Image (cartoon, one colour):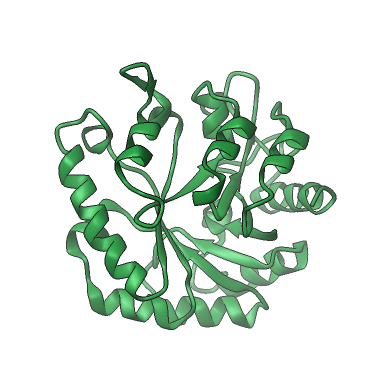
Length: 249
């Protein structure tokens, strides 16, 4: 497993005059790769070059439903050309989840975009939140999504905090979908879940020994903390998380 950082964690330090210094600091913390949460107004090459200059890999790039609707093949070519392997969909609105009015349309969009990504050597994935674990016909809506779409069409980027917040056991859920989850988002939180407060990895309530044991098939474990906590800034949170993860993998 390689240690990555979802750069959303440090999003308030990505102004044009800050971005290179921010990436250098992430590298110094021990991160080997960066997952970007969109292109942020840059070209794929510009983002990849800045990431490489800091000594890290741009291994993953989040997509959204508008990207799937647009299905810009030139953009997909440009993303593939810089070595990105994974394209997680960051989230879907409720009407596009299982049971929603646009679920079938969304699955068709995923199949089309995912096929184009696959032609270019990339895997389309889905990054879950807690609301994806709401029950439909007795099981989580996320399960319905993964039952509808095969693993070669849609991978899983499972988020430990949101799994816990959605009332499933993170380690058990990771084991269930291990064969389609090359990236695991490592995120910690307080007892009442992520919407009540986030924590650096290892500082909250999640069972990390069980989670790390379940992550054996993952290529990347990717730290994310949506908001800083405990009086620390985002850099200190990211560094605390990196130190904890490195001591366990």
